[in-house]
Image (cartoon, rainbow, N blue to C red; front, side, top):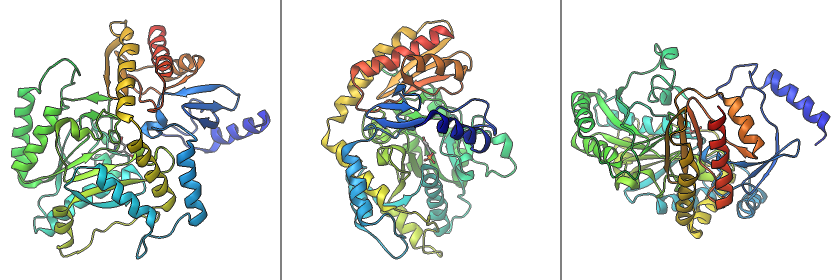
Amino acid sequence: MEAEEIERLLAVDREHVWHPYAPMPATAPAHPVVSAEGVRLTLADGRELIDGMSSWWAAIHGYNHPVLNEALTDQLGRMAHVMFGGLTHPPALRLAELLLKVTPEPLTKVFFADSGSVAVEVAIKMALQFWRSQGRPERHRLFTVRGGYHGDTFGDMAVCDPVNGMHHLFSDVLPSHVFAPPPPLWQTGSGDGPDPAYLDELAAMVAAHAHELAAIIVEPVVQGAGGMRFYHPGHLAALRALADEHDLLFIADEIATGFGRSGPWWGCDHADVVPDIMCVGKALTGGYLTMAATLCTDRVADGISSGDAGALMHGPTYMANPLAAAVACASIELLLSRRWRDEVTAISRGLSAGLEPARGLPGVADVRVLGAIGVIETTRPVDVQAVQKIVMDRGVWVRPFRDLIYTMPPYICSPDEIGRITGAMVAAVRAI
Ligand SMILES: *Cc1c(COP(=O)(O)O)cnc(C)c1O
């Protein structure tokens, strides 16, 4: 693209376009990307960057993938979209079949949403409507742990970490839920078990509030955007057991952890637990289009549908979009046909080896790796611009937040590319 045209467009960006979690006008310029192929992004000035972010956990197979492209163009030739009210179509039904095949057995019903945030809204609505239908409207609060992230809409924000989620800005309009302290950090590979004192605290808090609780909602084992924290699967198992003990629904937000990112298919698999309601998104379409889904058990679906309302009151305009569904089917089939577990294991080893030199460096608080997720936590908030300059000079794209420099690369990254990403991250912490 002409340099002049790029300059003109960047002026539009500066003047008129909001970016995520940014002021308007922005305080830092955005970098123009003109194409992407495999694990590389190409900037307007011709520079190539290895993408250490998978475009926010999504592009697990890399960019411009021939199989995903073909699924999309094939569907495009048939129909880009059709409403889902009263109509249905093969891509959505094939996707439902595939999702039921790869998720735990008790999940039998699928609600298609148009983003992860909406999938979590639907999960919360399912839980509340379930108890309303049972004549138990007093069961209207949710139980969660601090440090979580579940999306940016108001219902979701109310279960995000109260501090990171900026609850103070909206405390007068957000519903008030019950928050346990954050789960203790899990030193993966250390052999440490769950923390008995924390388990007691969870048990006491759930028992104290059980009469007013509809559900427990958590991100299984990995708390993503809330702080890139890993917690012991024993804590997840304990929450599931508490939900059973007090007859609460258990919602697993697998939007970040799903599709192998943390090692197994689902974060819940670390603890062999099965949720009553599960949200998937992000990598669902291999990073091509926005789509998510909320799955639930027969019991939840029957409970909702037998109530006075008789229906789940939700229905996005672009629900089950055929293009997104077709590419999601192709992405899941691609996973099923590949040795993705070996790829994730190899990435995990590469991340551990590559990030290890950061441990003990001045300014580094912790280094942790789980599945294809690698994190350097610093002792102070990082200068995002300074870190990005260093990693981009080394041909790598990562985007730190707060005190976290982290990567969750595409599964197709070679050992050499993982080495480039971790090398750039370590160089950045050395420099700052
Ligand atoms: C990203 C994310 C969401 C929100 O998904 P969007 O598609 O960005 O709306 C919800 N929950 C978790 C765990 C996430 O990581």
